[in-house]
Length: 359
Image (cartoon, rainbow, N blue to C red; front, side):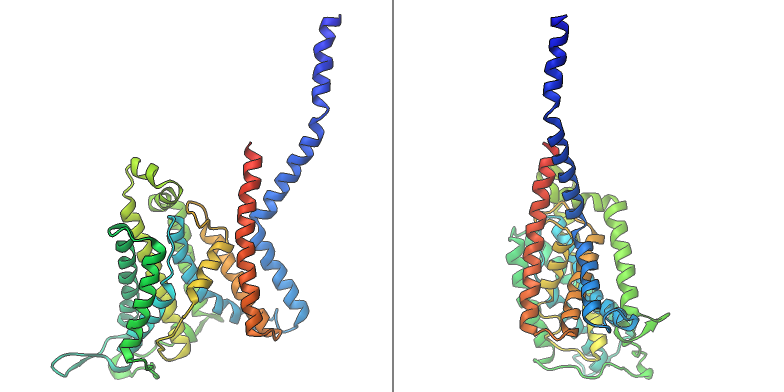
């Protein structure tokens, strides 16, 4: 009897401390859920806070205007997310936007002057395509610098940032192309549709953001290319051993980033109605911030386009909300910087909580 009941006594004694462990486990799981949804929670909190402060914040017209502003950051951030997922970084997207805007704006304003004195005029569609191709080409240069010349992504894209901005200035010798309306006889009218028109009451820029985001989500979640992007960022050496051509993947994501940046630059140029060399200056910081806020790990291999979109809305709604309530532009920078740092801290906290759950 005593031998049979002794194990039971030991078992019951061992089971007693399990209750606190279970409570800790429940708390850890709750913390993980909150951390995973932190960006969406922040977005909802911002909307509630600013709508309580200002009655104009939560109106349909203001929401559409803010979403239109977000579309620029979102397009830049979607491209940057592809790069960060592979473990890289792209600091040149703002300058690529400016360069694409200047090239396309110049083609609309003065055409392409040939050596013989003739001028070639392109249709609006061709001008837009050329602008996007310019962005893709600069992105390809970034990719080649990183993969073939083994330049660190930070240095390579920083150098291209300066070079692209310099080329944008050289395109007009520091001036602007003030009138991009075009003329019917040259078939180059309608450029203002990108940034100045609406469809079914929603700005075209928002529709473009939705289409690009949907395509990016499909690519990252439903295609072999998307799986390879995550594989390269998760463990590049393992990806190489698995037969993935990592250099091609890296070049491809920089091309995607450049094309997205160019498209954002064209929308911004269209909205302004003129091409400025300084268009989208420092916008790369907003793009990277949106990706980080959305949960994209700077080390690569983890993140999502949906998260990046939510991060872009947080950045945009926060900036516009601070403007609406009259906060100084200097304090806006302080707040935005604090939010970015907190996002990184929370991302690291999430990793620690995840480690606790798996050990």
